[in-house]
Length: 146
Image 1: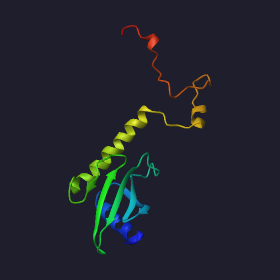
Image 2: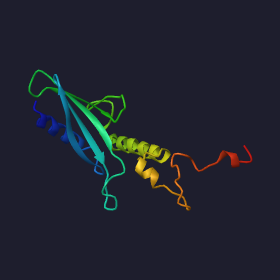
Image 3: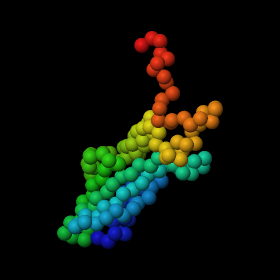
Image 4: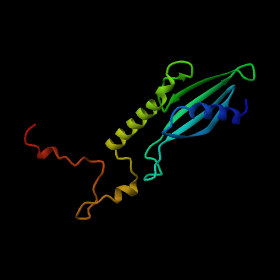
């Protein structure tokens, strides 16, 4: 199987997963009889053409002995659960799985400041003093009842 044939197979699979998300298929690498691809899902809109987060799904196409014999496994992001097309998940659940992974990323983004040093130097208070975005605004010393 050639690289572009595998890419077409993966694209055909993921295009049916969601009508909300757009996707792009990328070739990863080939080792032995396995072709690796990853698909990046995103949901840009007119107000935010650059999406706040994306979800990656990693595909392994293991080629068999015949030209049309292959096996496909995939997993979402860094999850260890490997899915197959004929088992582990119903077709109607792919979009909700992508939603869940993206929602978890947004929750983490709200809890952690993932900015750069440049962004840190741009965080100032009303007196133009630098404010550490990593330190919560709550001061435990001012609490009266614990």
